[in-house]
Image (cartoon, rainbow, N blue to C red; front, side, top):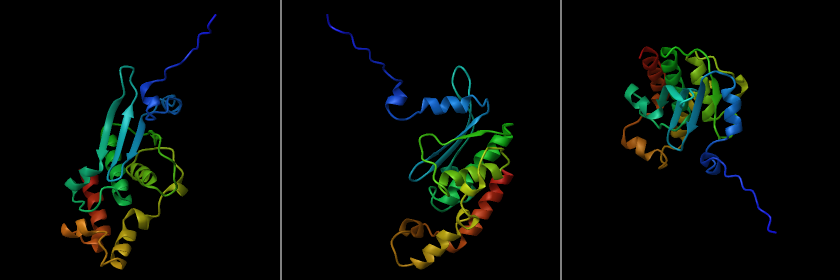
Length: 188
C-alpha cells in the first residue's frame, strides 16, 4: 500500500518572501495602526495603515517624490529625504486623527542609524507616538544633510553628483533646503 504524503501550500505572499505573517499577527494584536516603512534604492514610502476585516485601510501615506512639491531638489533616497518623508506621513496622520502607531519595517533588517530609523524619527517629530529607541536614530548632522554637503565639497571633481549638478542643485545649501522643506510640510 502506498503512503500518502501531505503537503501544505503556504500563502502566496509567504512563498514569494514578501510577508512574514507571524510578525504581522503580533503587530495587529496591538490594535494600533501600523506604520509601514518601505525603502527602495531611490525612494522611500511611509504609510499609516489600519486593520479592517475586509482589508487594510491606508489612513495616511507619503512618498519621497512628494518632497519635490515642497521644494526638495536633492535625492529622494537619502537620509534627509527619509526623515522628511516620515515627517510628512506624520503630519498627514495627525490630520487623520491618529495619535499613536506601531512601526512595521517589514522584511527589512533593523540597522542602527539607517534610513528606516530616520523615517521613524521624522514620524515621532511630527507628533505620532510610536515605540522607539533613541540610540537607533541617526545624528542630527546626518539627518539635516550636512554630511552630504561635506562630502560633495571634498569630491568636487567627481562624477558622483553629476545628475544633480545638471539640475543646479547647490550642496552647500542642503541644510537650508532641509529646514525650508520641513517648515513647508509643517504648514501644509
